[in-house]
Amino acid sequence: MGFFDFLTEEIAIDLGTANTLIIHNDKVVVDSPSIVAMDRRNNKIIAVGQEANQMQGKTHENIKTIRPLKDGVIADFNASEQMISLFIKNIPSLKKRFFTPSLRMVICIPSGITEVEMRAVRESAERVNGKEVYLIHEPMAAAIGIGVDIMQPKGNMIVDIGGGTTEIAVIALSGIVCDKSVKIAGDVFTNDIIYYMRTQHNLFIGERTAERVKISIGSATEELENPPEDMSVQGRDLLTGKPKEILISYREIHKALDKSIIRIEDSVMETLAQTPPELAADIYNTGVYLAGGGSMLRGLDKRLSQKTELPIFIAEDPLRAVVRGTGTVLKNIERYKSVLIK
Ligand SMILES: Nc1ncnc2c1ncn2[C@@H]1O[C@H](COP(=O)(O)OP(=O)(O)OP(=O)(O)O)[C@@H](O)[C@H]1O
Ligand SMILES: [Mg+2]
Image (cartoon, rainbow, N blue to C red; front, side, top):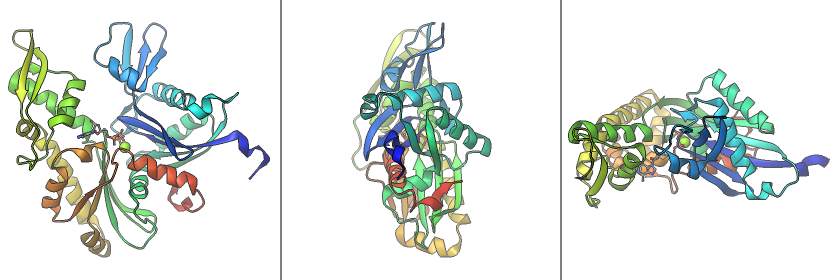
């Protein structure tokens, strides 16, 4: 411990396509949608997180909402940096400080990210006062967050279905043995629903409405044990131009999502097929762990279980598994040195 260590604060960040989470002092202090609202006239950020989310789809010509991440990677660096910087500044225990403390940060990144993108994330973090910046792969963080002992000579399969990407990884001895990252996840599910409503019902619905439909009645299977009630969905009639409402069942949403779910199933099967036999034997015994918000889609666990003939377990708090794992690594940097990206 150096003399000036009291000037350093430690934070763990899960910078996700859909949600950004930050842990500080063992607590989740930020859990917000990854969205900023910007004034077009002067490019000033006027809102971030929840507040910006509520403006989505309802802006006028002077305001635009931006989701700085797309498909799991940063698409708009300027917006993403400003968003992170505001999230950090608004952490209550840091707000009280006289000056911005220097930060020791662990940030998780998708496993499919390129060297250039990785460097950009690191530089971004340094510009928001990150003095020591460590990166960790998202499925590794998810595994640690779920409570898997990643250091054992034992194979574990993690499937993290987020907003932008589905990350599938087999982990053993603190390393990723094989992995796959596909750009099919929550955002694609939402767009599938928008497309389905447009083509099957001539109803044009917004993104926020489609996401509500997905969460309320979304289903990966045609037969659910505890089916949700039908839902009324409002939008604009494409033929008459008038606002309209129709009643939708979970079976229809299953139809809308089926193609995308098949692609996730295929990716899981491909990763299993690449797994070395000793590790495959371990996975046969322990099953597959699911994390990420997309894993909460009704019936998805059952469907994956039928396809793989393996037991499937959903993480306790799937939306927070990755940030919890990142927080664990932050607290035990020495112990987890081998999983950090150089
Ligand atoms: N109950 C639910 N059923 C289905 N989908 C859900 C549910 N709850 C949240 N989601 C979806 O989960 C996604 C967000 O998950 P998560 O926060 O894990 O993603 P992320 O980490 O931001 O994205 P990524 O890891 O791809 O960068 C969103 O698309 C959201 O609509
Ligand atoms: Mg994620």
